[in-house]
Amino acid sequence: MRPSTQKSVHLEFENIGCLSHIGVEFRPGLNIIRAPNASGKTSLVRALTSMFSDRIPPGHILALDNVQGRIRVQYDGAVYEKVLRRTTNGSVLSSGSMLPFADHRAFDACVALADTGVVHKITGGGAAFREYLENLSYGKYYSVVISSAQELVDELSRELAGPNFKNFEALPLFLTELTELHIQRDQIKERIKNLQARHKAEVDKMVKKADDKASILSREETRLSVLKNNLAREEEKEQQLLSFLGLTDDSSKVAVRLRDGIAESKAKQSRIGEEVTKRTESLEVLEKEVERLKSEAEQKRTGKIRGLRSLEKRLRRINKSVILKEEDIQQAEKFAAEDPKYTGRLVIEVRGEILKKIDWLNKAIAYFQEKYLRRMTTARLRFNRNITKAFEELGLKGFETVFLDQDFSLHLVRENSVQQPVETLSASEKLTISLILMLAAKETFLPNFPLFIVDELTLSYDPERFKQIVNYVKQRVPYVIVTSLTGGEVEKPEVTYET
Amino acid sequence: MVFDLSSWKQSFEIVSQELELARRKKQALDDLLSTGRVSRPTYEHLEKGLTGTMRDLETQLRSHAERMTDRAEELEKQTQLLELLLAKLEIHHAAEEIDDGTYGKQRDAVELGLAATKNELNQIRNSLMKVAAKPA
Image (tube, rainbow over all chains, first blue to last red; front, side, top):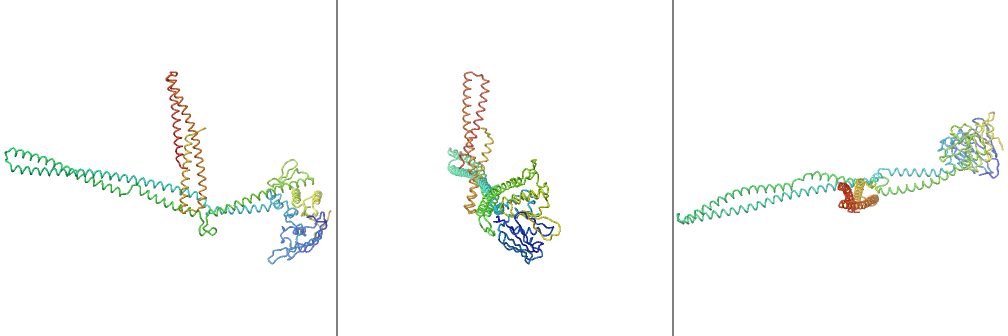
């Protein structure tokens, strides 16, 4: 904001720094505050600065031995007043009105204090200068939004890395393990089935063998029975022949034939008897054999199947593992009932909500990053334009170009095209570059701000360079305020003017 | 087309095994749902991943099958060509246009090639039959 008519600015301070009371006037043009060391120059500058920026804490302004101070500024026909009060706990509070052109960014772009000046910023490297331009271009707001959103994303991502979510992420692995257990279980069941089938086949084979033997035994028994019948019939026949022989004459032909018949019958009986004995013995062996086979078949049937027990044991163990794995899966898909945040909720649902939030935040980050980049790129380009303009107008020799690169690192190129690191500049060159950058910043971001304050500028310059710089500044800013160290008898700061 | 028999067989078997495992997993997952061990949303989340995997594996398997079919056709043509060559050789020999020694050497070479071709063709056909026999 440019004052409607460029009139004097009147300031009045009470209990500021080492000054109990002072009134000064700043006129359009160059105002030089002259005073010896520790006589209130910086206090005055700080107090004035506090009327358009809140970057200087009130505690740094109010006199240490006072509980109340006052800053009054008369500007453009109006009075602006700020009161500083020390509370019982020692802190200092300020109240009142600020100047109409107050802008917190002016502290960075229009006030070069010896202890907080831009010199520190340009020597601080790309990150410091980026921050400087972020503040001035309001890119900081986007930067804060981006870093806050990123922080939230990080927080949510950390939450997703928690044990419940980790277990949930392991579900596909659990499912694979469960499937492998199922496969093992099926394989063992198949082996058990095969083992049982093989055993049954063996038992059936033995039973069949016993049955076959039993049927042979049965046939043999029938044969023996037939033989015994035959023997009985022969014995009966012999008895009949003997009884007939008793009735007949011994010398008769009938008796001879009867005796032959008896002898034949006896021989036959003897043969059959032998056969019966033999068969009876063989039958006994066969009976024992059948008995043994049946017993063996029964033993086989009721006995243990070799290898079955260990397979069944393994099956039981796998079944147990299946149950445990299923429990793992059940636990992994849900938060515990005693979970303080997501009591008993499904992890998939909570995870979905968190992922949605992360997605939304990432979109916001991308949106603000684009905005930030655009704003910062524009700021950097405008800034570089103003630096070039300042160098041209000032006619400073020794530098071909000074510019900020994409990483906001300051590049100083000497006339011989050699890049010079900022740190290697002389003190006066550093200050000159800093002032030019600061003015470029002011022209870029606060073109209408009416004040430009430089503390202790004269210390680093010869009178000619000082005049050159001040003239350059004067052309751009209505009120230039510079502090200058003087010796002599002056007690309070005095202002001299150059239009 | 370079066609390494052992490598396609190996990758075909690997893909088949992976597909089989994926199908078993799907079965295990279905069981978990039917027994109430997992909720429907978790089931759908896992099923989605599994279906994707199965689809990819089936595509790979189909691609293998297509390559194998192409190769089988190529081998069939090769077989026909070799059989034709063998028949011509027999005719030339019968007409006594080539001597016994040359005939013997050439016949052995062609028969060796024919046997190798038929062997590879059979292997491919067997594998293709396996693919066709597996449920989709």
